[in-house]
Length: 176
Image 1 (cartoon, rainbow, N blue to C red):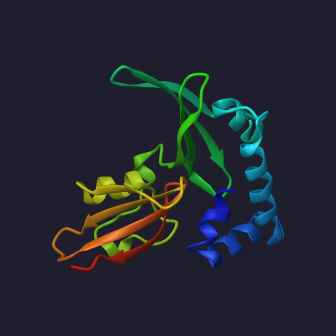
Image 2: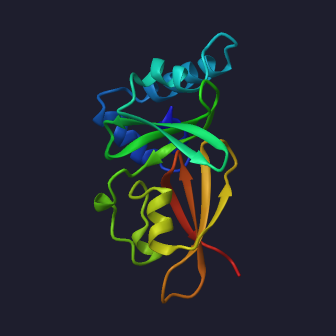
Image 3: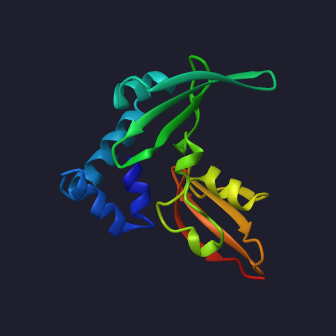
C-alpha cells in the first residue's frame, strides 16, 4: 500500500523496490486494491487492530500525551527501509489519526546541509524539520501525503518537499 502512493512520484524507485522484494510489478497494484477494499469494509477493524492484521504485532507500542488527549503509538519494521519504522498514532480503541514512516534513531539520519541533499527516499519529515527548522507543514492532496516548505541556511529562496507516507518523494523550488 505504501508503494502505490509513492509510485505517483517515483515510479522507477518503486519498480526497483518491488523487484528487491521479489514481487512482480502487478503486485503493487493488487496490494493497493486489497488494502482499499479492506479499509472501506464496514466489518474490517479500525486503528491498531486493523494494522495488526496487516503488519503483525508492532515492534514497539507506547502512549503519548498531547494536552488532555492520549494516543497510542505503534512502530513496525519494514524490509525496504530498515532504518525507519512505520508509525501509527491512534486513539485508544479507536481510529488511526496519522500513519507514516519515522526515524527512531537520529544517528541514522542523512546529512542535510542544503536542499540538494534532500533526495527521494532519503529522509522523513522529522529529518527535514531537524535540519532546516523552522519549517511550514501542510496537508497534502491525499491522506498519505504531506508537504513541507523550508529554507536552506545560507541559500536564498525556499523549497517545497513532497512526502508520501512520511518519506520524501520530491523537492522543488518555491516561486517568489
